[in-house]
Length: 171
Image (cartoon, rainbow, N blue to C red; front, side, top):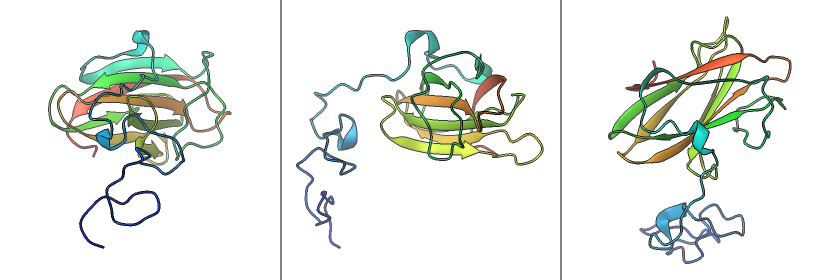
């Protein structure tokens, strides 16, 4: 095709519907269709807002603690265990690695936009056996806000987790 933005009928044209994922609903964050007037609601609570923290152990929790099981990444297994959703704001432009390498069980990790509407990355078993920890590289512009979802891979595997966010791509 030629230049332009594909709209939902797949013709190369400007998308005037504001429905970036073609699900029949307008999407607040998609393609900034509203000129910035629409404000995305965060899918994490203030207690789990990490600000722009970078380093090992910036977040922690447990998949044994009851919370709503609402957000699942595309790579997650059959877990009905509660997940924890953290908010994180990029302190600078570049690559960042979010990982659960220091956790004690088979984790799953997904990165979404601030409203948990668009999945940007998902990892389960980044390190493989033994351990089965997760890592996702986040490509960010300073000030971008992300939701980071930590869960267990399966309902049989729960425990305490530690979330690290460090500068540079995951290795």
